Length: 421
Image (tube, helix red, strand yellow):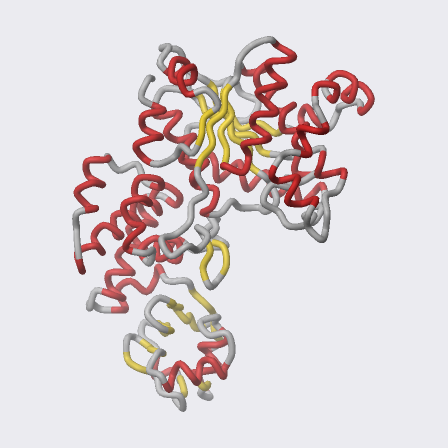
């Protein structure tokens, strides 16, 4: 159980801790430690940007400790101003409930979690709890008297996230200003109910984490601790998890396993080693060997990254299908072989019977943003059907089908399987 912090450091998970020496002693005590991370239900799926937090909980459990994931059915109605330039859209109650279901299902794929309403069966089995259970029933006046009195407005105003919003054009609403108090109260409740002594979160959560530690100390007279993770950016300086198509989601309905795999394998060569440490469970010795690869061989490292990361989220079968599809499409083999794993789009047979302009299909299926863009790509040699270049005036008919489908490519990375109904 003493190897958790060492593992986090070796893999690049730690930005700051609140008390390094005592935190190390806590994890080396021989007793399971409960630590939590909160997840915002602003959507029905988490995205790749949440993976650092998820993987931190995975390593926590693998080290023999208990991961506690808090899905914010209560705080999600307020919204965390940290890192936000304006007030977030307020979600309806039923939308929050649907989003919570999605988050619970996704988190349960990454680590062992006790079923809802069932006590953990082992000392390190995880829990997923909703802070609506203790926040929605609070009496406002009692909460101000019992909890609000411990908070200094001066200190809250000094928080970086608050200062940035106060200086922005949109300002900071009183609703959002209360978020830090609610998150601190979460930590107190989790300490009291589950013996949770550690909160983890992104670097932008430092102020909220410290507020919770202070509240636990003031109310319970006992220590609590915090760990923050670094902001992950790509080697080119971009935000982790953002692509031309938008966010990379963990939900297969939003980002297919194939596209998820492609996100990882298309990452910058310079990021391969760092991402292998953060987003896979491969042994460090194996990662160090992959980091030594150079030139064209670096693709083997990124293939290991893509397979391992996809397997954690979607399972090994889907990861294998995505890998086989990518090898077939990019490795010089039969492009038909991997087509079934490529994101699909449907086209009526009657349309093909009469012939349909290829540029229209490339646009309609989402490979090109417009027909004009498709024409430009065709003139530049960037459109392909079954790895054969598609000319600007090409018309697709049923004669172009193989096994009842068309396999299209725009540029080097974007694919669609056109299925005929």
